[in-house]
Length: 297
Image (cartoon, rainbow, N blue to C red; front, top):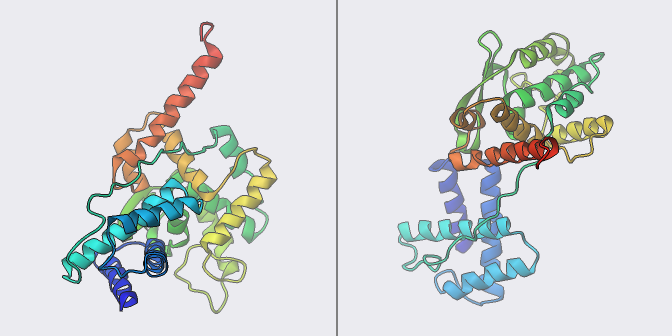
C-alpha cells in the first residue's frame, strides 16, 4: 500500500507540479530509502513515524557519507511527501513540521577564463560531420548557458537562426527564450548544412537537432563524453563538465556588465539568489586582479 502512495505522489509531482524526470527519479529513490528505514530500523509505518524517526534517518545518511546537499534533498522529499499525505487525508500528523533543512554552504562554481574557453572551443576539427556537430554543440552551450539536458532535448522547431533566438524547456518544463550569438548561429548553420544530414539514418527521429554516430538523439552521457574528450585534448588543468560552460557563460556575462536579472532569465533560475553566486565569483576575480596588481595589496 505504501509503495502505491509513493507512486501516487510521484504522479502528482509530474502532473500537477511539472517536475523534471530526474527530480522525480530522485524523489522516488529517496522515499523508498526512507520507507525501508522505517520498516527495517524503526519497525514502524509512515503513520507511526515521529520526529525522532526522521532525525534518525537523516543521521544514518550522514554516517553513510552522504553530503549535506544529499541529506537536505532527502528531507525535502520526505517533507513534501508528508504534506501530500496530509492534504489527501491519508495521515493526520506530519513528523517533519518542526525540522529545518540543513543550511548549505554554496560552493563557488569552477569556470574557465575567456582565453581557456576560446582554446577549448577551437579543438573540434571541421573536416568531418562529427567535428562540425561538436563545434556547433560547444559553441551553443557557451553562447546560451543551456543545461546539458536542455541542449540534447532541442528540436529543429526550437531554433530560429534568422531572429537569433532558441526556445528551450528547463526544470519543470518551463519555457524560456535565449539569445543566440552570431558565432554560435554561424556554426549551427554550418552543422545544419554539412553535418546533420550525414548523421541521420532511416530510423532517426528527424525532429532532433543533435545526433550521435548511430543516428540517434544525442544523450546527456554522450555530450559529457564529447566534452571530456576535448578537455583532455586541450590540456586545460581544470575539471571541465557540460555545466562548466553554463557557469562560464554566466560569469563572463556579469564580468562584462550584464545585469543580474537578465542573466537570471537567460539561465532559467526561478530564484535570483541562485544566480547571485556568480557575483561572488566576479568579486573574487576582482580581488585576485587587485592582489596581483596593486603595490600595496
